[in-house]
Length: 514
Image (cartoon, rainbow, N blue to C red; front, top):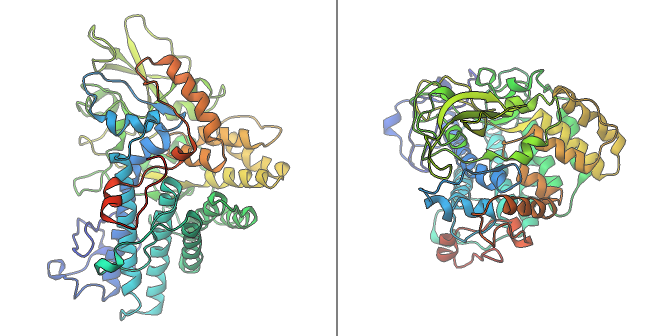
């Protein structure tokens, strides 16, 4: 079978819809498929499997609020004329959470959509008239994806209901919450069962599908995130990945350039493609400034007043980069422009030039705003339409996670080479020792704006300490922040279950404090 990059979408469980798929995912005739005739052939299961990948895209947009802006990496541009998002976006960022939050709900539903589709495949594949080899291949990928969705759930919502079979009636629809430890147990079981059937990445660019390296990376993170840490088991998985075919790219900027998609540093990416077939990304425009014309930034004129101004790098983060860090000019740039005499809380900026953030000197008659540039690779040909993949697991993550793992085991000297390898690629000199703090700090710069900061802070137990200090800083800078903002409490280390779910499922109990 010819391998191609995974892009096709399956949109609705039980109702199959196809868009301009690569030929290895196509079947014919597409218009005559029903539930009774589907799930019969290898082609059917391949198409259904693509549908299990599709909800991954529903995790990226909530992640910029829940994983980046919730932390000390980024903030938002306060925009007085449009206070509408305040009840569901700014509440996350300011730690003034409500129980009904659009982004938090979307993430929850996207995860369970993926789990539902995975369960349908796993339930039906045993009775299908396909070879054992095909069953193992499909099941391996499906189990990895189900584990991925449950990992995202447990790290953001705590213990959640465990659905492991296709839901076919009302009786099987309502389940109580499992404990977080039970969810981790299922994640680990799914990954252990998937790994024997997943391939090792040997050629690049990769297909975009799950591999043995991706499953081992997720397994290592599960071992290091659950309450009863298992560092030696995680160490074994991470060292297996190091002995595979992955490597750091020489140039940090190349990691994010869509020309190099699914490259040797990529272990698992969420796939996007610029075009008209519904597979494009739009997340970039939320990270760009509020501007009436994005021409200078994207090569195409878009009024970005309604979308822009989120996930803005804060000045403390910018100032904390070491001198000579090659990741800074890749990750952050400055837009320079004017406000036409308006108030900065009101007017969108008129973009005049893009400047490098390092040693930037503001012009007296200009305004300037830093913005995330690592996912900007224009010129683009269509508005709100980009093709950059979203990185999930990178080889740099393996190296720094292994360094963290070894430090947690008291083997700091063994951790140091892995830490310095990442620093050297960034143009920085070696450190003399590896500590949990300097590894966490290195992760902050290496994975800036990749939606990893939140889980890094949670996993290392640093979130309350770091975010309390950061909250005090932000409240001293911005008078519009409410008095109860940045109330960093233990219960807010997980997010609320969607209110609607607690109303329709009598077995479901809300997280404390919401």
